[in-house]
Length: 135
Image (cartoon, rainbow, N blue to C red; front, side):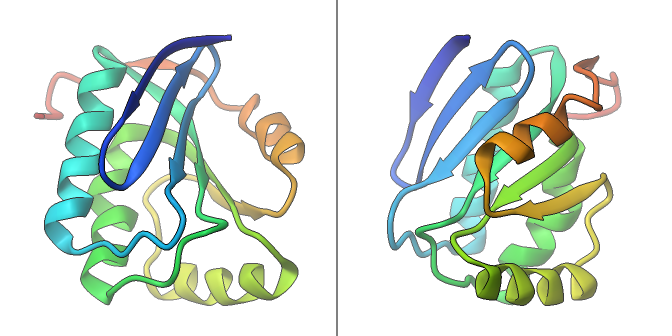
């Protein structure tokens, strides 16, 4: 069940009871400032909780190294786990390569099937946001 929906120039966000869904708009190109805005808005939307995240990047081209690093490090503070939805097995192989270079700080897996991704996310709880994490 969807609790809250929000959108900006780059993504659609849905806060659900069990997870946070972020879907990148088709052909979205990000720079570091856009990535920071997305994380800030997602953090504000989630409020005092941290959710497992389903991140749909199926229609998104690759983005610069600094953006990947930001999402892998700072962005991971806003999720208890991250299931990344890609469009094909080939994209999954490429994304796995990027994950080995930019290791996320939370459990992260790649999926081509949204239902399998959501099932995997069920292992991870929604938790209270630690007081040290600033917006």
